[in-house]
Image (cartoon, rainbow, N blue to C red):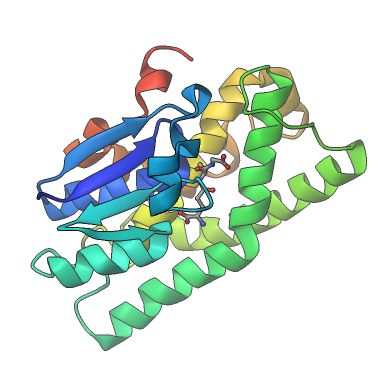
Length: 228
Ligand SMILES: N[C@@H](CCC(=O)N[C@@H](CS)C(=O)NCC(=O)O)C(=O)O
């Protein structure tokens, strides 16, 4: 059985896996699940991932969830187009950038994204943050994006001369924040994140590199394309 990828539209964790598979040129069966239809909470899906979350892959009967281990699995399965660097130092650098993102930026950027979407009436169920939480989260996102801006300002891939797992792991979250900012324009303007290009020109240029890849076009969240 071919590699299957179970994913959700607009899920940055899922987007990581789709982007990785596309960049590697892997053949896969796309299994798009609908959050609102309860597809992630069916007994069949919960058997694959008891947390009821995407992404999940199934490869010849082997089931794996958690986006970053999935990227590592795809790398081992198909090392010809490397996502984790071409030598030991590049590999360490890719992992360091992912680790920094996971530890310092992923939570605040994702929480801010969800909050902007909820404010705009477009997010998943859940309550919006208190003003105090919101302020702290914005501060953390701006601080970490400023640090990331220094790396992105070179206008190249984050590591080496090709897209790596660092680009793949980070881009979907920044793109999802940008999308949320277009939905909640007044709030985004109030916190100075309405135009990433103005505030973080390096990040904006780096996003352009990724967006020029056919892999990005092919994995662009379908419900965004439909204007939702
Ligand atoms: N740590 C997981 C996070 C996966 C995750 O939170 N996915 C979200 C979509 S962005 C999900 O499936 N949420 C469904 C739910 O919580 O019911 C990963 O890296 O794959």
